[in-house]
Figure 1 (spheres, rainbow, N blue to C red):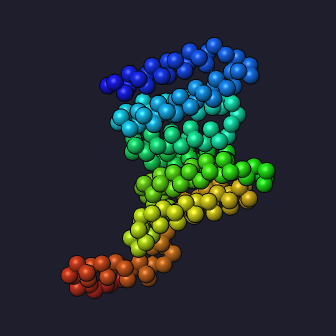
Figure 2: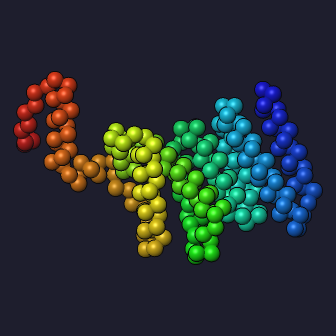
Figure 3: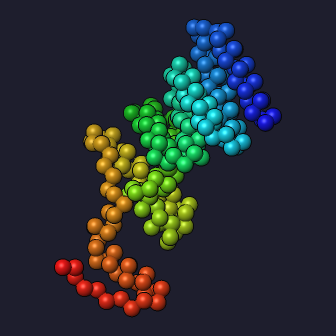
Amino acid sequence: MRGSIFVSRLLSDAQRADAAYDQDAGTTAASLLAQAYQVAASALRKLGEHQLGWLAADRAIRAVERTGDLCWHGVATFRVGNALLAMGRADAALRVQLGAVNRLSPDTSADDTEARMSVYGIVVLQAAMAAARNNGTYLQTRYKRLAARRGPMRALVATEHAMIISIWHMLTTGETYNDLGSDFYNRNNPTQARRRAIAQLQHLGYDVTLTHAT
């Protein structure tokens, strides 16, 4: 309760300070307001107030858009993704993160700054986390298959790598993302899928005899 009151006061003070400035000083005030919203979003998530955390993170994005700072925009989007994942909305979190990834993707070598690439990395990583929780998708199926053999952390990094490749392909070709589907591996290699299913049943103690469906 005390934490919520503190966050409320923090945001009220930041909003009043932001309203007192304009022009050049207004950009700085907007940046500070965005940071205050992000602190609030993080605190509210830890307090279990996920809906309020999402609202604070969303307000941070609105504030940071006034500054034109892509790095801060990416960090604010990261906070939104955190809140959405905490609320169990993996699909929405993935869409938000992919939007930020597209904005942060460097157009030229001059855009390849350390700060921008750092933010780009955490946003892509969170997008991979959202994809791993997004039911009925190719990326979730891929993550689960890899996690069973290599462990969750390696599977997450592999999923992130696959997403970066897909994003690069879309940026260079102009194509839109087309999910391969959760049954991609079964469709791509039905013989292996059949062998795996038989092995699982045999491991459970069943004798398996297959006949073609009529």
